[in-house]
Image (cartoon, rainbow over the protein chains, first blue to last red):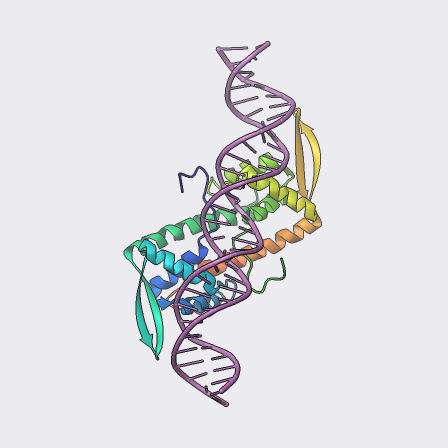
Amino acid sequence: MAARETNPNFMNGVPELLILRLLQQEEMYGYEIVQAIRNRTAAVIAVGEGVVYPVLHALEREGALRSRRKTVNSRSRIYYSVTPRGSHRLADLSEAWSNLAAAIQKMLTGGQHGEAIQ
Amino acid sequence: MAARETNPNFMNGVPELLILRLLQQEEMYGYEIVQAIRNRTAAVIAVGEGVVYPVLHALEREGALRSRRKTVNSRSRIYYSVTPRGSHRLADLSEAWSNLAAAIQKMLTGGQHGEAIQ
DNA sequence: CCATAATACCTCGTGGTTCGATGTATGGCA
DNA sequence: TGCCATACATCGAACCACGAGGTATTATGG
């Protein structure tokens, strides 16, 4: 975790990004997040529980999330919500993603110098 | 290494995608690709030689690239260009990336609840 | 000339993430 | 009673990107 000369693993942290984004919009619990991601992306992205729960635990440990037990319909659930720190982290990840996506998009669609493609 | 039920590692394969894209535009050699990616993305993405060369070798092994030695300015280089198979692979990766980026973009900018896709 | 940098190639071990499998427990329903 | 959906959790395997390190050749410049 020392200083990085180049860019860190570009792509990693997408599950984390999506989870933070969902939780910023509304309080949710793990099992719900798994399905929400699947539903809202039309199954383009499908993270399993084995991905979501560890991320939730890690984020809570870092102070980016806070949790509270709550029983709904005689179902015990652990609801998570973002802290100010989590909000800040979301902003960072969000910007990093935007830069990355823009860079790739530009490479995919951009015709380098005015050279003819053939 | 069997068939995958869910989505494969969403993010992986970005270096491969960028390399294929560059080579489709023009014949290039490894060392040049490293710098081209860095330059054309304003250093947002910076893959090292340790990433590029193994990808080139793997793609050639799969028949997605073909190579030829060429000496330019008394510099011996190995130029790579995409085969029809590589072109097909680029199309696949490109589409996968587009879907992914669109899905994430929608989640980041979307309102409270995911609305109908449009 | 010799040292240094830049070019150009290559491989290996490491590390961080995601994945799928698996495990536990409870509630609804036929 | 049996089964499925809900809801939590963890673990090892797989995978990919990364940086460090290694070789060789060609300019540069003191």
